[in-house]
Image 1: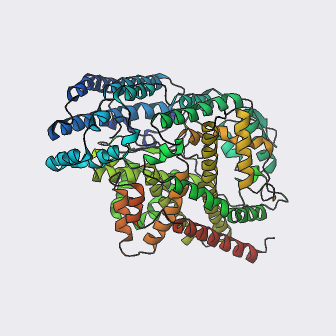
Image 2: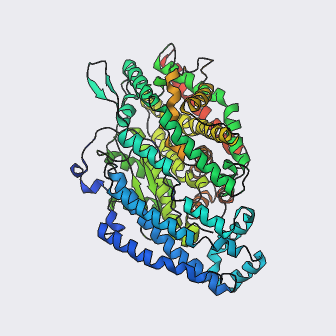
Image 3: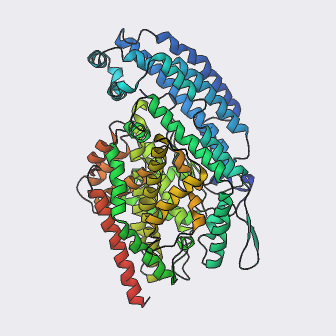
Length: 623
């Protein structure tokens, strides 16, 4: 059954942020227009009150669901109507809050909505157990009898498929009430890290003093001054280390929540519970980790190239984000970045590009950073009858241009799915959520590299693309390995402390970066890095960045090579929503994620880029 509070997942990608203005200093054309959702807070409150008044109506169907197809359809349609409105209400408060995380008003509005939903969930706890008192053949008969039930067939079938994990009505009510406290660790984490944790001060090589906020750190780590990078890294991570006990308790609480829910529903593990909801075999997750570990030599080759281009005797972890090509700084204003993205996306057709233009012109996007604004970037398609919204923190870097293309990929998948599918089938699973975004990054890279002849600029672009392999394929899999490990530790009765989390993370980090082989030396203070990764609160999400990246490499290659039907199949995939299981949707699009082929193609593509870089370096006589 579709969860009444199912929202399009907020997809977060860290980006560099430079400069902090107050929000009222930014022109309206660069800010999203939330009046498309509700004209103002008063309208939101009125809509919320109307919703609350309707909610009691769900009890009228109790005891009647298996009596007739008409009763079942009426209940599901009633539920769907409320679900759409709850999602829209929640989206408004989230976007408003993210504009200024210092303002508690919208967090309070969100919390009131969460309380309402928790109360409503207890009222709906009877639905799944009651439906499961029937035989599937009887429900299938209802579906054949009532045309309106066709859009609910997949959800109903999935419900019966996981019958052993559905509890009795009283037990379901208890789990529903627990939603009042679920996510607390994540909420505390976000508030503490983004709003309340003190930032250290550092003195740079030019004797200027700087408060090392997350945005300032992200900027300095890309500095060409190695001494400044070193100072920033030491101060930033040692500051996190001061609060490792607190961060450890937050992450431990989050992991225990996942395990509690998994065990309550009689799953063998938290990872099984998480992946089963998307019909993803655990073997796919483990295969990714195994394949990446087998191909760490390719990653270490990348690190060797980075070391060669930087001209350092020993590559350190604080060197990884440094510019490797001197006197080349890829800078693009937002208007320039917008033009590049539109040109790069041209292979996807006029309708796609025109819709992207519409998103930019009609203020679906919040583009620049402002004081108190949430860091990072995301796209949220939770307002089915409106349009998706994008949060950016654009800073004129090439990375920001790439992030713009990335988030537009998410937005277009939400847009096409909402346009093509009825509401119950519009929400796509997380396993395919990063395909459209990374697909756009592939198109952007290929457009840029085809239109640049200068060796230094090509090197900069090629290395930026390699950094994408590092960040999306290897780094996210490193995160996935850590996430799986810490859940297993707790499932085996081991408590997680800040120190123990740092020990686990440090071991995995040093393995990936070849610390023992001196591919990249990881200083001990970096092992607290896990405390700065919000994705660890997203319940086995991060591995899908990596799997999606391998899928998008294969699919983009087909579209760019103009293989027969490749574009049509890809656009159909974008509009498929949740109409089929993720593995099947990707097979229909042209890639089999149960095989090693997508991963193997990705490693081939990576080595091809490294071959070109080394050819240019050899031609330039770079030692």
